[in-house]
Image (cartoon, rainbow, N blue to C red; front, top):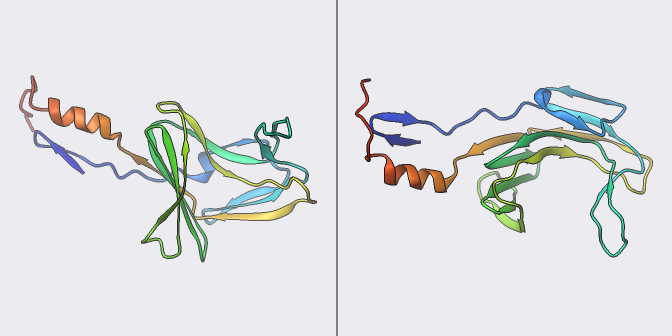
Length: 164
């Protein structure tokens, strides 16, 4: 929470609901129940970037929402916690066993100030497909620290006092 000239601004945001997300390569069988996505992952599907194999594949099911700015994504099951945080020009991936102490396991470049598709996906490149369940998925907005710093520096300049 940040306070400017008698004005309180809260940065707690409600998580993105699965029902409001959209499909890229919608699977034949899926449902949302009790804040969980259940789907049958389509056989012979994958997300694969060009490598020494020389091809790209983008045909696996992916339930997503378009997000800009900084955010935190969490996916929790009964034993594992995975958190991805987008900051500036990077995405940081963390894991935890207790949802309190997180350890970074990956830091990767991600173009700054560019909207991205965020969600859950399942791939089955070599199999006959399988049932997957994604529980407790959430997305939380994080304030852009550059903007907050600018606001702090400029909040007293040319700002009338609040009438409230």
